[in-house]
Every structure is written in structure tokens, then in C-alpha cells.
Picture 1 (cartoon, rainbow, N blue to C red):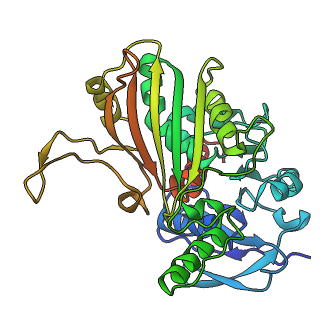
Picture 2: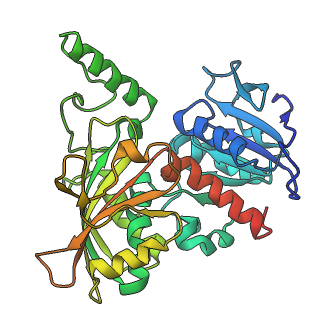
Length: 360
């Protein structure tokens, strides 16, 4: 039998009904970021229940000065819960999200389990926030790479209608989970100590390398990650005509994904107009300043990198330029923290949107 959820006093009065919240996958990398954001955003909490696998049950996590026990995730975990954040993998979302909904909770799921379910809204609040209002108990957070890509591209789509995108992603080790990040760090140490690095969580050794495989291969030679980017883009934009050709690559970076894009629009999009559009796009930081003198006096341009963007909630966009292979085409570079905007922050934004609209 589940213990009572831990009561959480608000940090300050907010005038919003406090909610009973559960976090499934609380001990994972995204779960940790969720808890930090709930604290920093002063999310209106009446109580908080932390859920994870049986091996984590009995441990505690500290939140607002209180040690909260971690419980095993079960069907009975969601009694009295208003909103449940799921970051525990697709299989567990499929197994336990229906039980959460049956208990009266609204589920915000970070896995791939429900993303392409036609009854489940796939939501990036800055892009298609109204879609969240049509939920039937479950809302899905898109794939992290899709979010980084679309935060830079969706504002341009509204202006000129995207027809086709050819993308290459540069995805951080932590995008494959805590075990992959720890493995990468161990590989760095092994290489520094003159030992041969080993790979288990990742398909190949990552240190000093790049791996053109994210997720498993499909019969046509694509990976599931590449297919997600194509299919999720159409669902989020609500436009079945858009096509995305992607190559997704794991790179030796701890955190934050990058995407390089060549974009074809129905109407021409100049770099100058793209800068104007993106400069006012919510959740986007344009880092694409004109040439300036760098410290050594040589011409340079501003552009975002994973090191700059790690820990930031926004998606940064730069390297805007005309596509020399296609008239009216545009090329850009987008970088975002996949644990934040690509997962935890997007989930919290969805819940905050529902609160603001009176749906929670």
C-alpha cells in the first residue's frame, strides 16, 4: 500500500490552487530536472509523491528542505493525484499512465509511448499550446531533438510554410540517459589514463568519436530517432505535407543537442527576414550577430554551442544563411538543452499552460 504523499508548503503565495503532484521516474536525469524546476518555478504544490523502480524504493530525495521517500511505481501510486509527470520510459508509461488517468490525474509523459497516438496531444507550448486543451488525460512531450529543431523552424513555418528539411543532429551523451553519460565520462578517464575505453550503454565508444546511430535501426536503414523527427514534426505543425530527412548522430558532448538544417519553404525566406521572425519568437534566443572584431582582431560571428546553452531553458539559433543549392532556401543551426527544453521544462510548461487556462 502506498504511503501518503508528502505535503509541500508553498515558497510564497501565488493565488493558484495547490496541486497534488506525482513524478514517475524521479531518480532519473529528467526527473531530477523536473524537481528542480518545480521548486524554482514555485509550482503550486499541495503534496509531492516521488515514484521510481523497485530498486530505488526506500531512498529519499531532498525537496524544499524536506526528505521525501521514493516509492515503487504501482497502479495505486496516483490516488488523489492532480498531475503526474512521467519520465520513466515508454514501457512503464504504457503500463502505468492509464492507471494514473483512471485515478483522476492528468499525465504529462516524456516518453515516446503516446506521441503518435491520434488521441494524445503532442505539445510544445510556444508552437501549438492550444492542442493541450484537447487532451483526454494524457499529453505527450515530443522527442528532444524534434523540440530543438522546431523551436527554431516553427516560427519560420508560420511565415513561409516549410515544405522540406534536411537535418543532421549532434546529440549529447546524456540524451541516451544517465548510464550513457557515466559511460562517456568513464571513457574520457580511460583514454586519459592510457586505457582502452569500453562501450556498453552506447553502440560504440564515444570519446574521440561520433556515432551515426541514435536509437535502433529500422528495416529501411533509418533509425527510430530519425523517423521520430519526421513524423512528430508533421503532427506538431498540423501539416501532413512537411517532410524531414534526418541523420541523427551522437557526439562526445555531455549535455545539449544541436541540429543543422537546410530548409525549403513554399515562399522564399531570406536570412534577414528569418532573423526578424526569430528575434521575437517566444522561447528562442537569436545568436547570429553581424561580423565583429574578435579578441585577436579577426572577423567572427556569434553562434550558439552546447557549452553556452547547457542549463538554459531557451533554444538558441544561429548560422542563418541562404541555401546556395536552392533559391529561397535557408540554413540554420539550433542548440537546446535536451534535459530542459527537450524534456523537463517542456513538461512543466504544459502543466503551467493547463493551470493558466483553468484546466488544472
